[in-house]
Image (tube, rainbow, N blue to C red):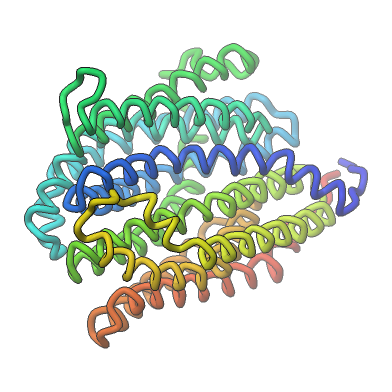
Length: 454
């Protein structure tokens, strides 16, 4: 299979055409959770602390289950390059099967989360409120996982723009629902943290409904839901083999941040609330990097399907350059407007506002330090996933995040007395090791794996 060489300008255009909707979709998806956090901060600090804890626990489990959805992107990108529509259909269906089964397994964990949180050292009131949220929001995991599968299916086929618009619609619905249900507006009851949970379910369900309709009407040739109940053991195993390592890799990273939230929770309500605010800000800028990582996965999967190694290398250089531009922009933002950014999450009359600001300013400086290494690790992870390489990256993630990152966060933060700065220093160290090892893996091994297709 032959292909016409592309210039760096053409690669840049191709990455941006695919990557910008993916970035926008990630930002919009993140805005759903960020809206919850901002409005809950206006409602009260105890509820904000509980929401920080609850959403950290929720997304640890959600991202583990999303491994099956993430496995779909490189597979569909490769099958699309080979023009194999049957394989696209088979892979997408079985990814949906795994997502449904996973939801059934984890919902009981969310339902009985309070004892787990108490065992992890969280305060009684915070743990109780967190379980209250998770018992409602947990039902949103099913449509959320279904949406993740279909968004990866559509993105791999370069239909990312529809995912962006669907997610923006869900953000608007979530804002309205939060405003109504958290604070009791429009004649509805004042539900507080329960209102945020209900709003999230509504938003996730809306997104799933819209992308299902799009897939049926715009891509009818794939017949995703025709005889959906028929098992496909071969593809079920393949999705599991690629998806489980991706899920565990994502779990290792996300649980590192959740573990950091647990450590911050042991320092008190105010440090935990400040951590939640800064983590949301850092995660928002990370959406740019995550979108570029997904574009890298699609481009690498296409190169693998066509057997085009020069395309892979040139595209990788372009993605890294764009990633570094994003890092520079986020650094400027965090160092120039720290108070303005933190105040977005706090009510003007919040009595603990000054204390949260004081801690938050310092943590934002730490967030600046790990922007670079976080960007490099996720982008290289995207390249490797596009090459269907998920096992070694999983080992790298576990060693980097839990063999190095979390022990360092615990040591610096709680044992040596550096508190929040110490916890975030551990995060920086773990991400740095991951970035170095994943970069080495891609440039020394990954680039040699794309062979010409005869």
